[in-house]
Amino acid sequence: MEWGAVVVAAGRGTRMGAADNKPYLKLAGRAVLAHTLEAFERSDSVKSIVLVVTSGEQKKAAEIIGNEGFGKVKLIIPGGAERQDSVYAGLTALDTEGVLVHDAARPLITSAQIEACCRAAEEHGSSAIAVPVKDTIKVSDGNGFIVATPERRTLWSVQTPQAFLRTELMQAHRQAQEEGAIATDDAMLLERLGRKVAIVEGDYANLKITTPEDLPIAELLLARRKEKGEPN
Ligand SMILES: Nc1ccn([C@@H]2O[C@H](COP(=O)(O)OP(=O)(O)OP(=O)(O)O)[C@@H](O)[C@H]2O)c(=O)n1
Ligand SMILES: C[C@](O)(CO)[C@H](O)COP(=O)(O)O
Image (cartoon, rainbow, N blue to C red; front, side, top):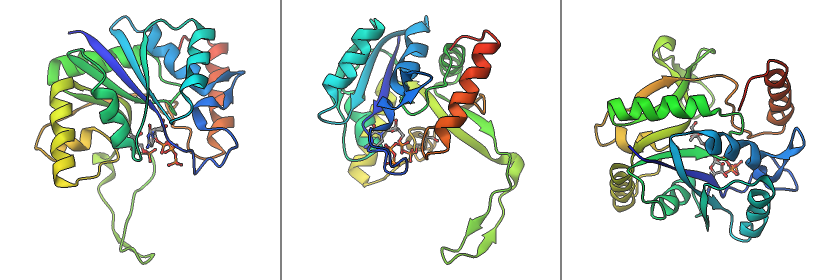
């Protein structure tokens, strides 16, 4: 199966609160976006990448891609108000049979994990990388009180990439649009249609740069990876 990637980098970084948008923050001397794209550039299964960025940041993104010599990024397009809109915009610009959707804010992804996602989706139809939850998770009543504790052994913290048949994911997005359904990840759009998404156990290091403390943690994880001679 031929695989493409939609890398979404069109958020505003509200929770990070930095002067620059998250994809352009420096991580070990390089833009967060450069680390993220490098793993997809190195993945033998990924043939093309559509990068979805904030309107007005297309030139900035293109400069990074040019400086890094990345050749798989075919299009840099503006995103939408929600992550779901940005993903859909990317899907309409890709023509591969398989699609990986990945957050640009997850720069510690590795090409090995990308390959594992592709293989699992080729076997099961779709897949999502995830790690077992380490904390006990509680459900609240919305007024600050705990009302339930889901069984921890059934809980996974899902990350990206998530891998799908492109036409299937596009159909799921269109159905969600028609029904006004908002999803915080793409797997949810298939789950709501009764489709099973295979879990690919990943790595706790594949964190999403979301709040300020995430950046120094990512720096440490990258330094440890370099000491061990591990590739992205
Ligand atoms: N309208 C949006 C919102 C998010 N994203 C992307 O989706 C990924 C996950 O989103 P998140 O970590 O929430 O990034 P932001 O939306 O920028 O952060 P915040 O919610 O704090 O504003 C990020 O790579 C982000 O750039 C996107 O492409 N388009
Ligand atoms: C897609 C995701 O990274 C899976 O954990 C997460 O849902 C993105 O959430 P965000 O609020 O858009 O960062």
